[in-house]
Length: 252
Image (cartoon, rainbow, N blue to C red; front, side):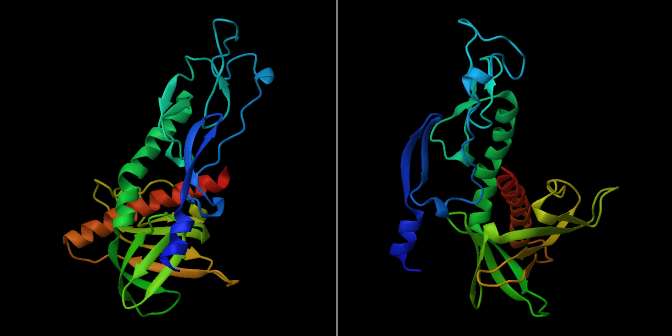
């Protein structure tokens, strides 16, 4: 892909919606797979009362719509303005208490883990059922749409085509399994961060363009205690979080 074509695909524009200003891709098909569409607002005539505390709306108790869920609330239940990066809002927007909590948790992904993914890390990479592994640097593309793997060759995996993620770890705390599975991009955040569990790798299944089957990709972190190893562990944790967000985007 030429740099000119890539630039056109990554081009963005500023648009105004009822919810606020958004910086969105010029071509919708090239948007981030982690993004969420703006929800339809519950019509004013259908919400005479706050959908959280049941307060009746009148001249003094005004109604407000949460920009994330689209439901109708009073100012007490929807008075927070929080950044909503997954909908590309330029400024913090009004959200209900529940949605504001979720958006604040997601902010860590955008502020920290996304940077880790885009910085990349080194893994032993195995494609399919091949017993041959190759040392490659794996990173997330700047437009968040591809995993880029570079070694002796170059491979690209479209994030939206990933169907299953399985994260492997050693030394779990009691009552935990030796591996963490995120089938269908479901599951909770692994517990190795800051604990005794040691991440060892990740297996991804995805559909390649023009292929009817599913391809498997396995990433294995190095076994030493070097900075490269720590970077790989951080990358695995960030990728697991990315898989959760991708699953949530598909459910919207």
